[in-house]
Image (spheres, rainbow, N blue to C red):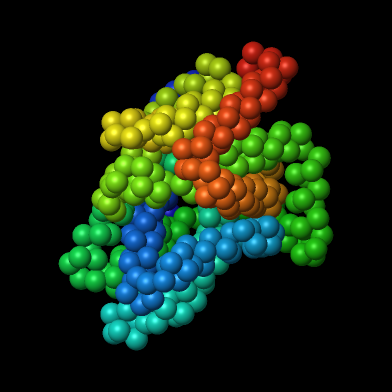
Length: 424
């Protein structure tokens, strides 16, 4: 029996007036199906991360090996995003997504089996985590490049915002679910749950009939790479977006780099307290997503980035002075909301600027800038915190964020009262 096709945007009747609801993209059946399964997939990823970190503490509890789990997962994004972007523009994206899901399903299933039987070692865990990181690079890039094919153009930023809701909902509850599962059955169940989530994505992909689009299939790899980089270099909006991304991520990375120290040393909290702070960030992000489209329509994307960057600076300053739960949680909520607002706006600007046949290569540049800025910023703020203190490092980061907000605000004034990359 053949799989039933899920309708796409070409099957929808055009509406004379755009639905202003932040949930409007969910009216498209194929996007709705992908969004629902993305919640499952994101939950699986967060549960997996909790399981991998916990498993390593029992295999080799040295700080170097425990931290290497995160490095093994994130390193492929830093060094392979651009080559992966070229690949995602040369191969049919539906087929590439299916391939990456099978790789991820096989990797997590192997990890679950080895852990269940007790055959897993620390280096096996790192090797399989690295393979999973490779698969995630292709998955994230291909998925990011596919979103504009699933919804009307005037709903793009809301579709990206809904993706952020999916991610942050999973971040809010995933670690807690992972902890419960591990307590009941052990780390292997976390990997099995993630394998199940990739199976769910495969189910939806099997029912998506992607429309034929232009690609760089006829070009050599080197020419495809050069074409993508050349486009990013000459496209003013894309260049501006990447500069703003780096200006935000470098100082904003202090949030994640120093958060464990804030929980343990400043507040005297244990792992549950740290989890509360992470959950609060997710809650702020979900809350902000409700009004993001309305904000874009009212003040434009330039002012949205400027104001949300300034608000993030306020949250960073607040957490630097927080010594009690109320102040810390409030600051984290503010930073979660402004983190989502800034990055979703920049992401939608990049997506709206890039032509479909160059989208994966352009987004690979975006994700590379994000990864390098995050890694570089984390190193810088960690060094400053070691030389001075955690609060001092956070206050310096807040000052840099204020300067970034002023820079974007000046650009917004020069551009005019509004700058929209999604037509309302």
